[in-house]
Length: 71
Image 1 (cartoon, rainbow, N blue to C red):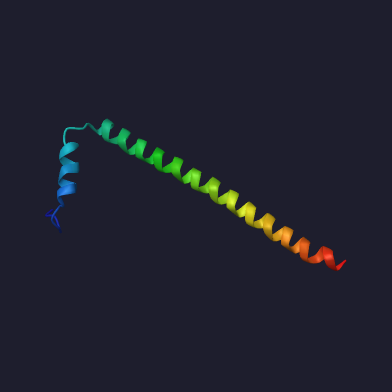
Image 2 (image 1 turned 90 degrees about the horizontal axis):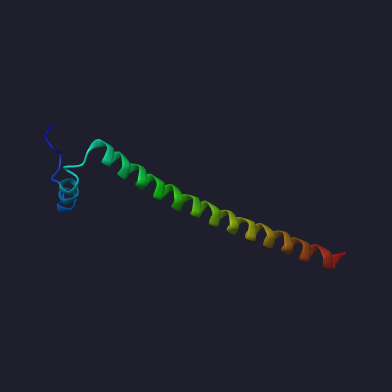
């Protein structure tokens, strides 16, 4: 099957660097890459959770501050 587009120099270099890799080496590279992505995603999730709790606490305190002076 012919390529539908020309490969960029960056892609050609990438493929050339891995031309002699075994299937296991390629799978290990993919596994490591996925592990890095998963770790970064987990950090983002944790940070987002912290931000949400800070906002929720701020909203609750604002509501309490608005209600308590009127009582």
